[in-house]
Length: 283
Ligand code: CAA
Image (cartoon, rainbow, N blue to C red; front, side):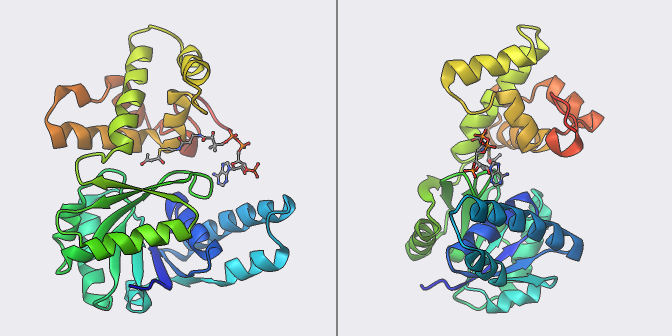
């Protein structure tokens, strides 16, 4: 199963980062979004990231141009007819993902692997929207994609071994580290990370300490690069709440109940860095 051409769906923070690392590793990339404006924004972020690599002497100007030239814009899912793998990084909504996968299944050649970058939605349920569940797999990159080494590779119930192997090989080719995980709510990354973030929000909610103190304890005490509340702002409080709800619903266990303060912030539109305000304020 040789992968040469990659289609990435969604040119946002995650999709743009995935497209960048694929193009840097020499893959031809079709970057798809429903809006040209989103593609242009994604491209601007990639150009800035690559320019930083040139400044730091990690790549030449020619290499930067070659990477950008490997990325082509797509506004039409039917471009999946040319892809060996599609990595979907659209919004975290099961209905939307199932609809995208059902369309991709119609369009893409029989050999094409359909991967999703979902952070917590069941791979098996997404796969069931297609007639090729053995070719559907989770490929969960971490944010910021160009910096973070991990890719959680999630096997759905029907994922074939050769598909897993091809995705593991591709992850290595991206200079990332693959870790194999089975399909249960939150996989490993978010099953462990989000309850920690949620507990930090409870700690703030109950007045145990200030937000700064909570973050300082975890940064200095546990050597985390960011405190949990700062990290929650960075990920997006709506995403954190959505993942907690997925864990709560998926396991039916009250230990995953989202903190009321997290709900309140999301209802207020305080979504973290992207909205200018979360636990902290951003310019
Ligand atoms: N895109 C590209 N590169 C970035 C970047 C971004 N958004 N943010 C930082 N970088 C690069 C910087 O350019 C810098 O590179 P060089 O100096 O080598 O050129 C390097 O990363 C370090 O950045 P800084 O010095 O500015 O800041 P830092 O040392 O604090 O590192 C960080 C920034 C890497 C984001 C670090 O704070 C960190 O590791 N934070 C935790 C990130 C994390 O936990 N991510 C997982 C989130 S959970 C997730 O993604 C899964 C999910 O489903 C929710």
